[in-house]
Structure formats: C-alpha cells, structure tokens
Length: 151
Image 1 (tube, helix red, strand yellow):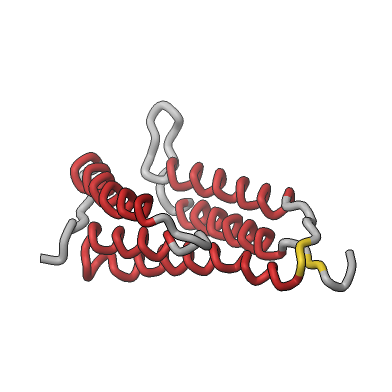
Image 2 (cartoon, helix red, strand yellow; image 1 turned 135 degrees about the vertical axis):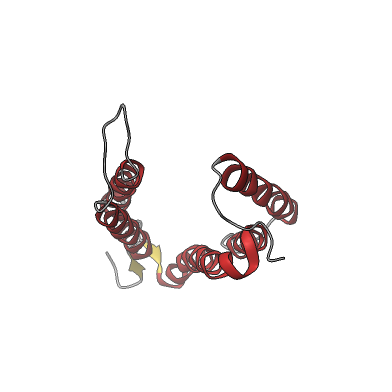
C-alpha cells in the first residue's frame, strides 16, 4: 500500500462496534430465563439476537477488504457512521420525553444525511411510514408501554 492510500478502517471499526454491542446484549440477557426453543423464556430472543448481531459484526470486521482508496476519501467513509449513530442516539434520548413518533422522525431525518446526496422523496416516505409502522408494531402489536406522542 502506498503513502496515499488507506484501508477502510471505518468499516472495520463499525464491525467491531456491532460485535461489541451484540456481545453486550447477549451478556446482559443472561440474567433472564432462557427457556427452550419450544417454550422460549424472556431471555431467549435477546441472547440469540445478540449473538447473531455479534456474528455479523465480526464478519464485517473480518471480511472488509483493503480497497486502496485515496486519503481524502477516507474521511467521507465516516459520514454514514456519524449520521447513523447520531440518529440512533437521538432516538434513544428522545424516546421517553418526546414519544415514539417524534423520536423516530428525528432518527429518520438524521440518518437520511448518511447519503452524500439525500433524496427528498425517499426521506418523506421514510418519515411518514417508519413512525406508523413503529407504533403499529410496538404499541399495538406487541403492547409495549411506549407513548406514541408526548401529550
């Protein structure tokens, strides 16, 4: 590799972050009864989901090829990670005070800027459909005690 090229370290770091989150979820879920496949306990899904997440995170970190991209393009790879992380962080921080709908809209708007040229039509569709699906799934479908709106 020459002095003007870098490896896609942001992909590797992202994979390691996903791996770490997956392992943390699986470790935290160990405190719940696991159950069996036929009669799943409350810890079954988080443990399995955590290990699947860790597996894919490890796969991303391990299988990321060295691409030899120019140095000035290396920082462009951080844009998706920064905006996706900002969207998830905003969602987590706004969920209780602002409700599921508003926090999901903010997450979708922030995450949309992960693309270099955001598509307004795609953003509008996502901002409308994602909160509707979230409320339908989590509030009505699963009966989770989440407020849709702050009022």
